[in-house]
Amino acid sequence: MIRLSVNVNKVATLRNSRGARVPRVLDAVAICVESGVHGITVHPRADRRHITPEDVREIAAALADRRPAVEYNIEGDPRPDLLALVHEVRPDQCTLVPVVPGEITSQKGWSAGPESERLPGVVRDLKARGVRISLFVDPEASSIELAASLGADRVELYTEPFARAFERGGLDARRAVHTYASAARLARSLGMGVNAGHDLDLDNLLLFRDLPHLEEVSIGHAIISRALFMGLAPVVREYLDVLGPVL
Image 1: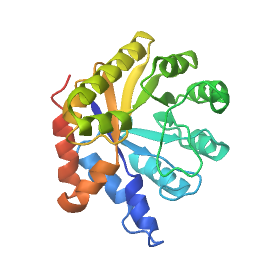
Image 2: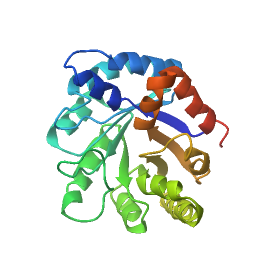
Image 3: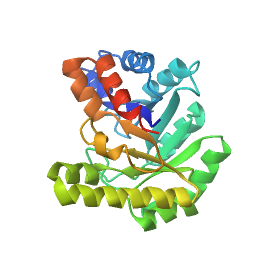
């Protein structure tokens, strides 16, 4: 079964738009967990525009009795305050993601260069604390080989390019599947697990779920957007149904 980790950032975005505590992120977490998800993902950004450090701590406390059956995944760039929070909370997984100043959402994966020079020490430190490390990467051989050289346990394949190719359909979609399948096979051959995330939804998952060696998908925007009209629990179950039959 492909595991589903629900990113609850968008619930915090809506809450923060009024500067209060409604909707409560913990309520969303509880509904997701009771509906059968395998994980909860948060991405606390430096500007605190959605998930805050307080949310991270509260979610950790709420999941304490559920882990490791329900995993806690904290993603973000390896800035000092984020790393301090990971040290404190000790999630099951930390997904390290490069951040472009001013971006609305993630735009790319890690590649060799100045921005990744700090990663070796960060990866060693977090792994020594018992945290599984996943690196957010484009489906390119050089990026996957970089992740392996750094000692990452997994890669998270950045799937927005796949989502756009799926929308175009036809040959573009088939080529994208081939690209991501090759990336997944390479990651597995280098001893890493395969996660994926970004713009995956109920439609494109029907194709993407057949990716070889896929262990986990992280989905937030599509789930929360549909939940506005359908309800969170039914939507989570829809996603689990799509992912469940796949071995």
